[in-house]
Length: 275
Image (cartoon, rainbow, N blue to C red; front, side):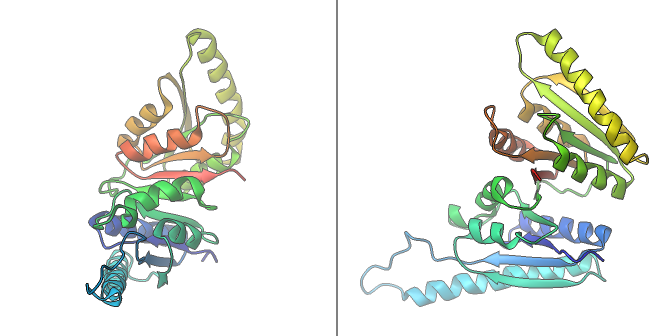
């Protein structure tokens, strides 16, 4: 068993439970333990008017909701992977930052794409958007049912010179799943023929080395003209995972592409920080 756990955030929503079930299956596949976390925060705008409801009552209600969400998530995870070691953790502070920090020493952090909280800052959706670009570990944003098996892992390649971390995650995920891998480069350029020829050559050279490292993975490539976010979001409908690298590079910003894919994907999306 790997020493690093998979951490998954929950807020009690149906999306969060799907993320928990995905994380439980992934932890079982990787021989990892599962840690389920949830945050309850008194929002800044929730000020108590004179002679109104006791603020402790509101705080207690939020804490109880958090604890109920953790219990339901633990039950769902145990049903999904009966022999999986499972722990739960209560987080304090702003949910987005708290959940993101909880993955600092994790194999990966898993979150749902939407939440059900009554307040926008508490929904898992705001957490997923923040974690996907700020966490120090790989982040998986689970969308939809996420249970279909396609035997394909797709990885977006923006810069062949700076994609090692994303490719490592993608090839390892494909190898674990006995799935094929598809490396995709999408571009928007007026000089389409030159851009396509250059991209095809660079991607071919890049994958030659990776095919040698992972001979059991059937690795293909695709170069297509279009907005990277739209291309990868569409591809997610036929992939078990879509893997994206993230780093601070000039526009078009990887963060904008990540947000586009996470917002419109049909399945799990993984963002991997540069090594």
